[in-house]
Picture 1 (cartoon, rainbow, N blue to C red):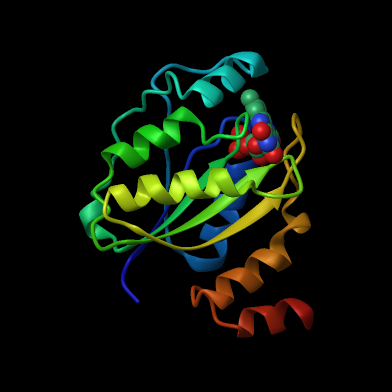
Picture 2 (cartoon, rainbow, N blue to C red; picture 1 turned 120 degrees about the vertical axis):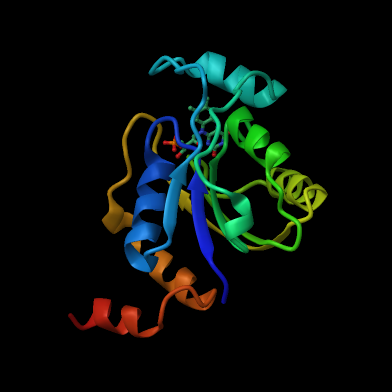
Amino acid sequence: MGKTLIVYYSWVGNTATVAREIQAQTGFTLRAIEEKKTRKPGAYAGAAMAGFFGIGGAIRPMDFSMAEYDQILLGVQIWAGHAPPAVLHFIRQAELSGKKVWLFITKADDHVPQPFLDGLVKRIEKRGGTVAGHFSVKTKMDTIIPVENFREDLTAWLAAQGFVEAATIAEQENP
Ligand SMILES: Cc1cc2nc3c(=O)[nH]c(=O)nc-3n(C[C@H](O)[C@H](O)[C@H](O)COP(=O)(O)O)c2cc1C
């Protein structure tokens, strides 16, 4: 396996929580996508509009070179059925030729809608990348998910993708 990067966008903090747990379990480099303009906490209507219409969300320059990595774990959430504009900006400017991308998704609903997934896959493929799999976590609006709610499932998924040893799971079950 080559070098892997975890990169995510998070407004409220749930996707950041999942990203940090992936980092804790794998040791991979972790980077946040940040919007140039700070989004006002609780300004949900504006964010929903931005998500639905894909407007705004220009991002700050990232302090890493994508060329260094050949596997990307990309953290995203659902805004009004769509990926936040910041993530779309990130993908649009990312050089993903020959890279494998795994998505980790947080959302308030039970399921990830297929059109949401298909849309992201299409955008990533347009940049030359291949989506190799995805993992999703159900969160609640306004609160940050406790790590305990998803840790075991995440470890199992990371092991299934070959990112962590299956032994980590046994260790969690029999500490
Ligand atoms: C503006 C807005 C729109 C949202 N729309 C959806 C949606 O369409 N479907 C869904 O399952 N969750 C939706 N959610 C819930 C978020 O996807 C979920 O809370 C996610 O974990 C937030 O990520 P973050 O904490 O990293 O910002 C929405 C949240 C916000 C703030």
